[in-house]
Every structure is written in structure tokens, then in C-alpha cells.
Length: 311
Image 1 (cartoon, rainbow, N blue to C red):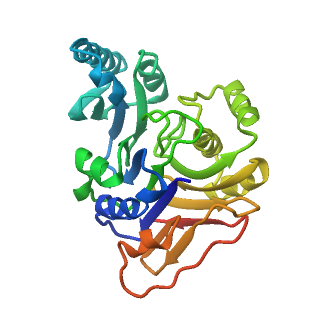
Image 2: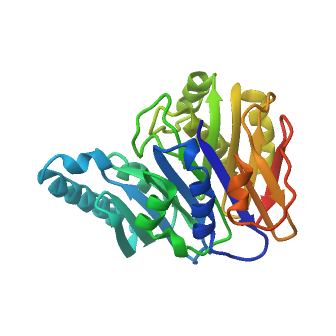
């Protein structure tokens, strides 16, 4: 079933970490297995934010050797960063297996990132100037508290509560998804893509990487490919409605935009609220009312509807 949510503030920042926590908590009945947040802060010049997973939560019960293995992986990550001329300015561990790095580097970052993901057991969850992607097992309030999201200030965010149906209950299969080569992109999705394998092979032939077998990751890779080749987000969303088969509603965020798209059958719900300074959307209205308890007007986007908003 799953639940998705998005919020964007026009021309200002807000406590989007707390807002998205409230929205996803209201949707936890739609997905108890994992929760994920893609939050966008104010970019700092020349800084890259990297969120890395160096193990799965289930690995933590495999004895004392796992901590030594994790430390070895982190050392390899740091060595690759150094080899590519990157400087680590900050390092935080929300959990033993989740690492947050603030780095500075001149030039392209794609080669460095690909080398990092060649380390067995290591996955980059996000890399960008504004995006921080956090996902873990458990409900939204648990994950938010674990990663300190309650005080996160930013302009926009998307989130997801997952009910595992066709893939494992692990971080690798949780939403949101991020993809090379367009940094600061994230996607959450509710539905099923029926031509997933055909489109995935098409993307792989063009050199794109996939880190899971979840069909939702395709939307991130597909969008990142289009934006990296000069497309506008709205054009990519419109083409996806024509090219992607299945039943789906999905949200895409970039450094300064939030977009949504629904398939031709519009079977997967989305409720939307829009005012002069804020837009909020979710699988159910209860999520929007968790942050806007006053009387508000909402509407359901039509089939094949595509919308894009600017921060």
C-alpha cells in the first residue's frame, strides 16, 4: 500500500524535518516496515553532503566482528575521498551503519562516488549540495528521532512509509531513492511499474547503476538521466506518464523544485493543498492536516496530471 508525502515552502525555509515527521507518522498505517526522508537544506558554497550506508541493521547482530568490518569499510571510504582530492569537513554517525559526511572537492564527483560504491557493503544514499536522504527500518517517529530530523531546517522535503510487497525489508529497498549523475534528486513512489525490467535494462545499457530490485528506483534513475541531459523536470514527468506502464503516483524533488505525476488510471491516491507560500501533498488528507489543522481546501489531482513547484 505505502504512503508518500511532500511539502515545499515558497521563498522561505521551515522546519521541514518536523513537518515531514508529522506527515509520515499520520501515514504509518500504510507502511510499517520502513520510513524514509529526503530533506533539502540551504546549500553551502563548495560543500557536498553525503549520506552513506556501510551495513544493514540486521548485520548488527552478527557478532563483534561486524564493528571491525564496518570500520574497515569507513577507512576505505575515507581513503577514496582522499585519493580524489576531497576533504572531510564533518563526520557524524547517527547509527553504527549510517554515516553523514560534509566534504569539499573541486571538479566532478561522479567518479569518486562510483569508486566508493565498489566497496562491498557500502551504498551512497544521497550526494548533493542541499539533499540529505535518510531511511531506516521502523516508523517515521522512530527514524526521525534516531537521525535528529526534528530540528532540520530547509525549504522542502518528500517522504515515504513502506509496506514491503515484492522486495526485502531492508534499507536498500526503502524509499526515497537517489541516482547518478544528477545530484540533489530524490523520488518516492506508490504503485507498481509493469515495464520495469525493460526500462531498467535500457538505463543500464546507457551506463546507469541500480542498487536494488525495487521498481521505484527506476523513477530516480530515469529522472536523473533526463535532467542530466538538459531536460526540464516538468518535461521529464510528462514523458514518464507516456513511457512508463503501470499504476503509479510519484513525487520528485530537486535542489529547488518539487514535482508530482500520476498515471493514466490515477488509481494511486494523492491529496494536494496549495497556498501562496506552501504546497503540501500526501496519500491521505490526514497527513496534510497533521501540519495544517485549520480548515483547508484540498483536491485530488486528475489522471495523467503533472505539476511542478519552485521553492
